[in-house]
Amino acid sequence: MTVKLSENTLSQIPDGIARPAYERSGVNAGIFHFGVGNFHRAHMATYIDELMNQGHALDWGIVGGGVRPEERTGRNLLAGQQWLCTLVEQSATASRTRIIGSMVDFLTPGDTQAIIERLSDPEIRIVSLTITEGGYFLDAEDRFDATHPEMAGDAKSPEAPRTVFGLILAALRARRDAGLAPFTIMSCDNIPHNGDVVRGTLTGLASLQDPAFARWIAENVAFPNGMVDRITPATTDHERALLVDRFGIEDHWPVFCEDFRQWVLEDRFPLGRPPLEQVGVQFVDDVAPFETMKLRILNAGHAIIAYAAGLLGIEYVHEAMADTQIAGFLEQLEQSEIMPRVPAVPGIDLDTYFSEIKRRFANPNIGDTIRRLCLDGSNRQPKFVVPIIRDAVADGGSLEGLALESALWCRYCAGETDAGDAIKPNDPHWDTLRSVALAAKSDPAQWLAQSNIYGDLGANERFAKAFTGWLNQLWRRGTAATLAAYLR
Image (cartoon, rainbow, N blue to C red; front, side, top):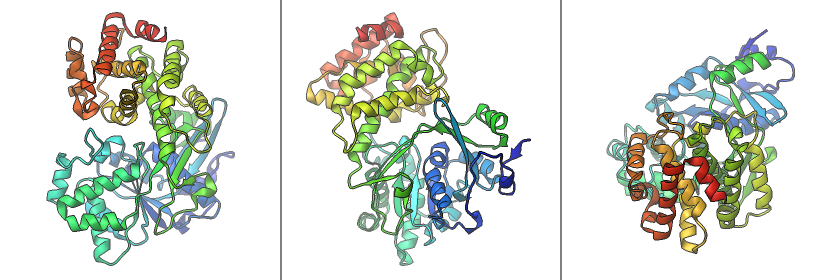
């Protein structure tokens, strides 16, 4: 028998599947979250749900919201389930399934007035974000880009905002004028110093509207930095069918993820916070060492295997880890050029951390795709890989592997695998990237001239020479032979 997930059918959920142990009707909102997707539900929503199951945080229910029209699809899927979803946590040998009930509402994305009113409600004490690495309107130096059309639009029409940051500013203004304390703003995105980045974008936009208001935000709003980690692939019909066949649950938008998770936060929440330390969140004075470790070893590690595997026609991450050349590329580049440039992290042995990452990448039950790892390189490379290249240029050490990773990304963006199969567009700026990548086949300098990605690194003779050599070799000999040359 298949159970269609809803509040009314929770009692019919098959035995062995955990469900909310609390009365959801008694949960009150406390958090407004922008960017309701798989990662949010597998991460923050899961932590909050666990607290609620312990009898805590019942006044920290989550309200979802967004600005993009495509977010309405997810909202509509969850609405028929009273915001419930199924979470399947998978190790290489076992699965654990549970129903998550910490979301209490999801406002229609794009309903500007309703979102501002909810954000202005004093019960909302935290506003959290998973809006992707590209959602913060940054330039090549990771500073606020005041020239971005969307920022210029919100600066011109603050009463009719169309971005997350415009909505937040409108609500903060309303709270200030009403004498209410501002909410804490917490990014859950994989970007360095994510709290500081949010502050920079928000005050940058505010300064275009009202410099005095920008100063008030800087002086009164808290922006804790945090490091988040859990590999969470996108949901497809395969996962929906698997949930029915294996667990007897019909869920329009389930989440399948790995069994590992990590969240490190700075404890700066003036209006209070859920007792997240009771469910494994680590609170620290400075999250920077943890985020540097994760962004460089894990996120850059994803990039290392992604483009080589994409060019070789490999579909899944665990299959890439079974390829001796790709696994060797990851091992050699991490050990020789990345991990030596990761500062010490309190309480963590980097070799042990890297071994755990390799285990996670090789998990066959996750079904994480190479295409997902290749997605949005124009935003991810400047945050995960380019900073390591800058360190390598500055310290004069090895950068051959980093140059090869950049060359593999360039070759991937040319839009064709080694076997001649077309690579479908996989970046918000795909057309531009493909045009430049094809031009770089005869003139590699054109790829590095993309200052929005590489800044001035293209002018560094040592890096440019290494990049040129590897890109030429990729075009001439192919990915497998080029990886073999690097490993030698």
